[in-house]
Image (cartoon, rainbow, N blue to C red):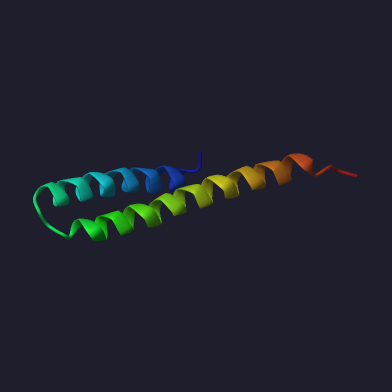
Length: 64
C-alpha cells in the first residue's frame, strides 16, 4: 500500500471519529467531517488502484 494511501485512510478514520463526536455533541459541524471522510476515502482508493495498475504494468513489460 502506498504511503499516501495509508495517510489518506488514517485521515478518513479520524474524520469519521470527529464527525461522530460532533453529532453526539449536537453540532452540525459534523457534516464537514463527513464530507472530508468521503474525499479522503476516495483519495485512498485512487492511490491504491493506481499502485496496483503501475505494478501490473511493470510486471507485463518484457525486455526485447
